[in-house]
Length: 94
Image 1 (spheres, rainbow, N blue to C red):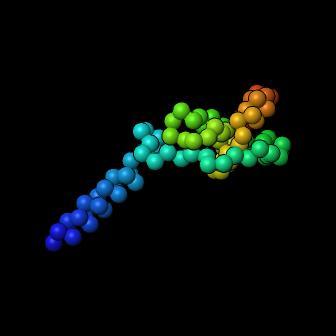
Image 2: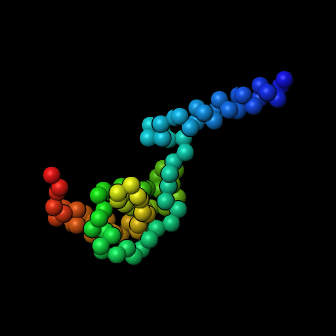
Image 3: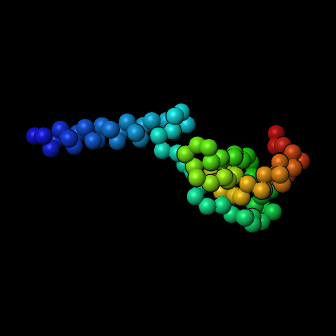
């Protein structure tokens, strides 16, 4: 009987963790573990947005997280200047 109660409690805990919104107080942060230094320009042109991953939080390395159509790529932070220029001059879709 004690085993069943422990299993039930464990199941409830896992359910709570899974249902917790990852954006508000992330229990399990998603971090880049490595970065790409060279990314083809055609790939960089298709970047919709990007975010900066800093080492001040849970993550261990600095990185740029590039967002595409449902995909993400971890890039070296030195690409940020190039991305800012490119996104500034990128024509906006209606």
